[in-house]
Length: 306
Figure 1: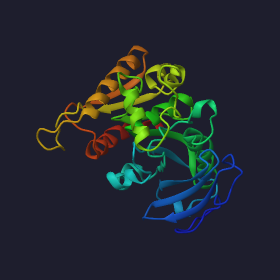
Figure 2: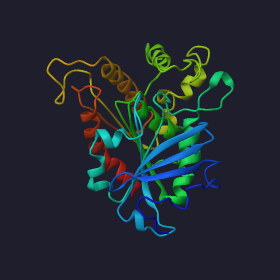
Figure 3: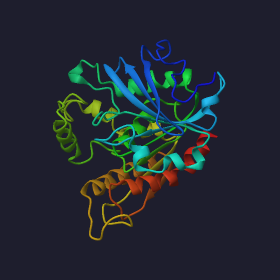
Figure 4: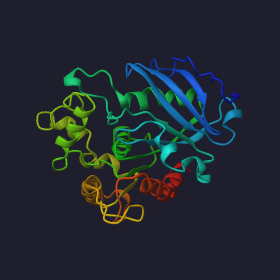
């Protein structure tokens, strides 16, 4: 089935493969970039998804499939941030991969929200893995060989999705990821961020003490047994000025994330995980480092796809 640039695919309007979700709009925004608007019951609204398509995708046959790399964005950002902040479009290694960059909400945390025990929207994990994934496999050439990576909040999301859905992903990478939400005083900081965005801070995972089990279910530090069979890539800086920073710069957040990542790495090593780390020392919480880490992790991710 060929799909011409700027036109809707056969999946537009489809509801039979995505749990009631459907693609309601499609727009070609670059030589290999396609933006989808998906109506999602899990979110109770529409959400955007950017696809970096492989070569030959527009002329694909009905049953033609490509391996898939999911790239998750960070807190307070949007689905187009990876193409805005990095050279992902220009990487020759991805010419034969379908790269999926979905909206995750500015503070969605890649989770189905608890909502004081009621559940319901927003359910980001259900949207990404239960609704969007089958839509992409049905109408957009997504195959069943998948890897996942993300930065900051998206680093957490990539590890959670790999842990929550055993067998769905062949490898996972996290760049400056929030990989241990229960670490130190981070829970109070996370809830402050939710307040800043007008959200009920207890709606996400509840109270970190009263709903401790829910928090642990969304903390990779407590999910290492589910991750130990996968290739895992963890990277972070230490918050001091690195090669992409002005002299004397210091980043408290990256320093805290470095501690989280070292703690998770130690726990993964103790569990016998297939772990690769790039704890590169000086570096802050910024795009030049995440672009570099995407490059450094690609051999691991692409090897898993093959």
